[in-house]
Image 1: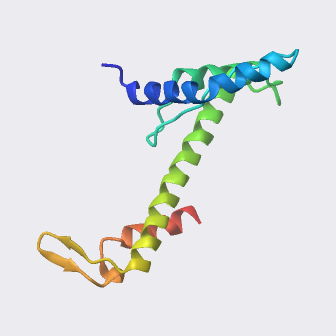
Image 2: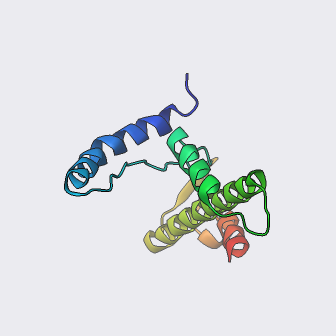
Length: 132
């Protein structure tokens, strides 16, 4: 089984949704375009199309400060990884805000967490401090 099967399936959905727009655009313009979805999962795995796009960008980007291609590639993926992690944390924090607004009670191992300040959501507060 392909470890990126979910990403590839989502890329296919994006192609089905947007490819016809590109074809219409190409009929009206001299310069031709190609739709390439850039897709990652929340754990940082990238579709093959995404990897190909990043490689193309890195190869065409002018070398600055004589940084080699391999080092630029490492920096790019590190920055993308950090961005994904930061947005995952924001997603958790947004969910916490929804929970506080609706004042939902939590049940864990027969113990009810009604006081959200003393709940397992303290982890979320630590995440907020980390990304601020």
